[in-house]
Length: 94
Picture (tube, rainbow, N blue to C red):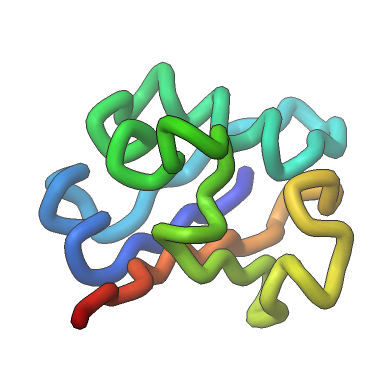
C-alpha cells in the first residue's frame, strides 16, 4: 500500500486527508500513480495537473518519503509498497 497525503487545497478538494492505494507488490512510476489516483479522486488530479503543461510542477510540491521529486527522478520516480507520497499545493500570488 502507498499512502498519499494531501495538504491545503488538495485536502479540501479531495475531501480526504490521505488515501491508500494498493500497488499489488509492484513498483510504478509517479506519473502512473497519479493516473491511478485519477480513478479515485478525479477532481484532485484536475487541480493538481497543469492543463497546458500536463505536469503538476507549477501547482504542487511532491515529496516521496520526504524527498522532493526533483532531487529524485521527477515524474519517473519509482513508487513502491510502503512509500508515502505527499502533495503540497504551491501558492501563487502577485
